[in-house]
Length: 454
Image (cartoon, rainbow, N blue to C red; front, side, top):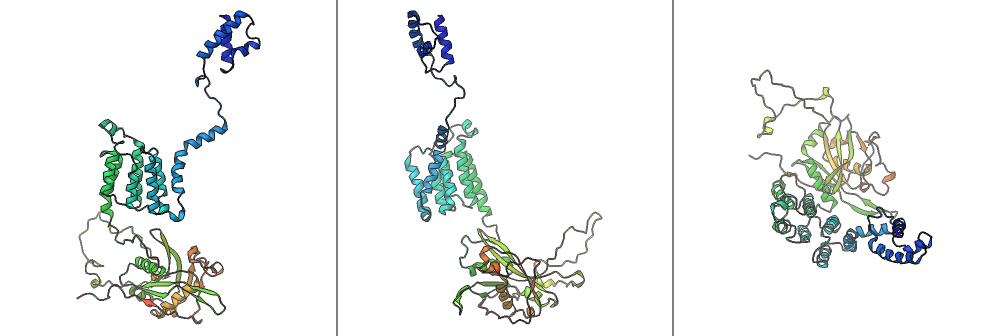
């Protein structure tokens, strides 16, 4: 028994893989026949009882080479799903290839293991394939979910958010549809009922979309088309019409984009120049004091969906208070809502006649334009074209306040040109210097006549 206790004590101190016979060689056990017989029997018992267990060693050391392998195995599913889309060439990333990748994943496994990771990876790659606004593709991704597996069977499962990870993935898919303004259809509803049931979070998200989207679909009084014109002249005409918000304003194309070769053999690129001016703006410019300068300022950005365009304005400083003349309103100018009301009403002592509305006068704007190259020479051509309908511009000094515009508006030699002026740097256009007046190519008629229907 004493030998057995010694063996057990040594077994606790040394690893389990080392035999008790080696311990006896170091002098821990007596070398007798009886002791050797007991050693053999006890060794068998010890080997049967004591085996490797995680409870014996709490924090076993892990080699660094195995840590990297574990991380690779952990992210293997995500990497595999991203590789399905990365294998497609960038030139051939279309709707057909995207649907083909989804079909490959559906046919790979009947149980659809890893479908949540695949849907998240597909949602992230949709803008690269150009299918982020396609309802058919979203329904195809919903079809990846296994059917009638995540449907709650009783009220307890429904109350405790049955399969929350899958429901969050379905809600995320519907939220991306909401971000891009995609309205679900009946097929989307049928898929959600088959996957999650009628009482689930994705189904509630679908009901909210179907309630609010039709109500907000036509609320914008100035809608923007889904496909903007690719021609820069047409895009400038549409943008200026949207900014002016005047049905009587006329859009004029002063110069079309073209390329020409000079006598020295250099390639010269002429940008487009499109301007807009209304009859009221022409009237204010005709009444402008010639001793006060007018300013050409810009560029100012205008966002049309994902496209950014820039425009320039011709404006003047506000008049000082001593020179302002209040003209009486003409009641015949507006028959629906008169501009002036002279009503004598009995007011209570608690009524306040003063308002805290601050009227800021920023000065009149006489005209606007868009051009493909925002340097001073190009804007000079615009001012020269305006002189045909506004002769007073030949008497009024014109100052340019141009900021550093975007790269799209700067030509090859604009880095050293006069386009990089700061607001405080003003250059006055000399009146005596002859300026070649460009030929007005096109002038659109006003969209509404000045007269009133009888």
